[in-house]
Every structure is written in C-alpha cells, then in structure tokens.
Image 1 (tube, rainbow, N blue to C red):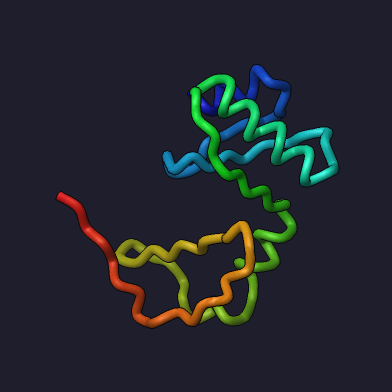
Image 2: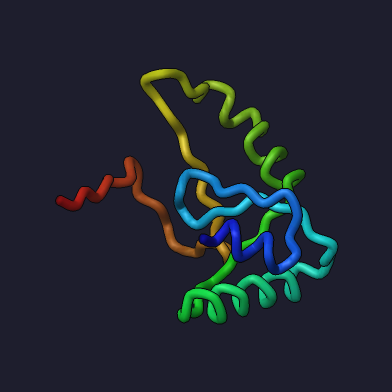
Length: 104
C-alpha cells in the first residue's frame, strides 16, 4: 500500500524494504525538508495518521555501511545486522548489549 501510494505520488523506482515502512525510491526533489514534508503529508492523506519521516541519500547509507567499524561484522546465514538511522542525534548514553524486547 505504501509503495503504491508513493508511486502514484510521483516517486520513481519505489521499493519497500523488510516490511518496516522503509522505502527506497528516486525523486526529483532535492530539498530534504520539502521531501520529508511531502512524504509526511502523503502518509497523512492516504493512511489517516501523521508520522515522522527520515530521509537518507543512498551515498550516505553506503558510506555508513562501508565504515571499517563494520568489517568484523559480516552477515551470514546465522547472523544478520541492522543499522538504525535516527532523525536527530542521540544525546543519551547507550548501554550495551541492547536488550531485545519480545512480545507474544
């Protein structure tokens, strides 16, 4: 549904990623603020709620994933790693390991 809404709104090459609300797309809009507002307004109009949107350029994601920090952590059949991008810089100390929450 989100992929279809984004395609109909004029975004190109729209794909969803891991059923998390993440989209991969191309857009003519180069102003990040206006692009974010456009997507937030689209979600509000099509789905009836407002949500925060984070936009990252492909080059920013690739440079982050390719940092030497991640070299020892190569994914395989038994391990998967996820990187989370925040909308704003985190100012709180993180405790490791981060506990996993399970529901069920």
